[in-house]
Amino acid sequence: MNTEFAPIFKLGRAERLQLVEDLWDSIAQEDTPSPVPDSKRDELRRRKERYLQHPASGRTWEQVKLRARAQHD
Image 1 (cartoon, one colour):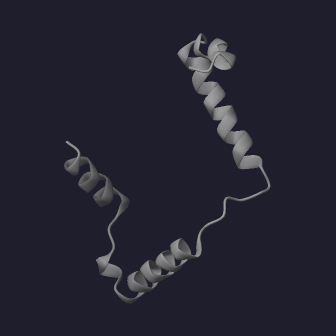
Image 2 (cartoon, one colour):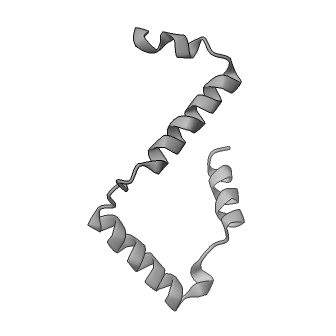
Image 3 (spheres, one colour):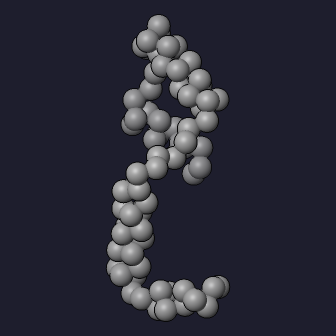
């Protein structure tokens, strides 16, 4: 453990969770967006096009969650 941050680990759970939330918020406010590689953009375009051509091939968020949970139970 980094001794510089040791006092943080002594905080209560709620305080540490608030700190994490504050850190995430500060990252989200940065004006430099995280770059998305072209390969990821291409894959998203491909998937969107496939879905637009075959809407029934998609799954609802509930279906995705159920499948993921079933795989890890």
